[in-house]
Image 1 (tube, one colour):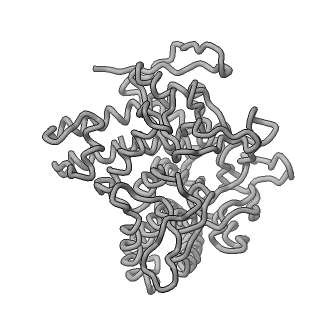
Image 2: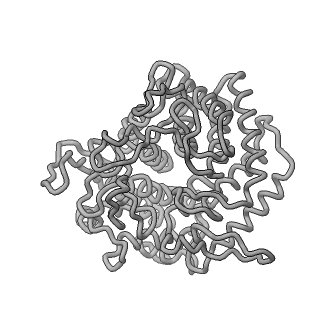
Image 3: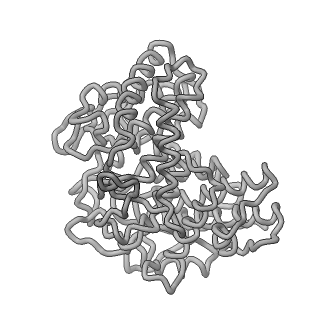
Length: 456
């Protein structure tokens, strides 16, 4: 059966929506992804495509990935400035550039990867107070911001993916950036960091997962990149540390450092209400957590239910409307989230995110692919809720289970497309009426959609 999705017309909140004659059929996701790729490229600078900081007038250097072309005075009901290069967002974007496998002559091809490596080296040379500094201006200067040790790990992974595509001088720059990152990470991986959402400092499941993937990639690399001493010990330590985030029901996003003399890491006090947190799914997609880890699947089931179940305190009303049209659900970051791009007028729990929704869809696709390739369903007491919520209880065949998972992912991507502004993706949607909100044209939103379709 062929499904179609109309893309919702632009309208102001509170006004009736109209559906234009744009329809997305089953074969349409790869075609839509081509458009999304070009929309994402608008946020990556080159020597001929220069972005100026709207407040300082500073001109961008090639290879800068701005988080979004959205700033105070530009986007209604938003008081945040996203015309900056976040190390994490840029790396996630480059995963998709490298995966596209375009020629040197193609827009968004090898030259974009070369520019990225050189811009990474520029930012690294200026980073302060630490090499984990998370945010830079379009010219490569550090912006006053937090220190986040997931960034150098993700940057290293992105550069590894780009390495064989770039020329010899760029490879030399890449090796130097990677070595500096590894020296920093091997000194920091056991320490607290600001987390993925830049709100709490502690022991981050996400940071630990991407650090582990980074160390594993370096340990297994055949590119001639040096493997520093301490890698094996760091890998073992992080594998053990990640297991300590399991509380018996789900993975906890943030833990506090253990008290002196104690091996136990308590829940970070200020992060109460922070779980279930979508950064656990991100830790699979961008990090080292296997998609068939049944503890991950238990967490993913809770994430879905807290925003799709009408009885949940975190329920988004738009998910009920969408369900009637065979769409969704859409997901947010964590229950009780108040950030909506307008710090002066925060609304609790009112905003699913495009990237969060795409991330869970991608997890469904990855699990489906794993089930088919292994002919095994990772069904146990922990993962039972994950499968039964999608009408694939114990005893469902491999083929049926895989199709159920793909269908579930498709419904989520269709919801993102339906609520988009003719494929342009903001950071968030309104949880009541579904219209886009927060900063416009978020680069990570496009990258997340592309990654989901690629894994589909």
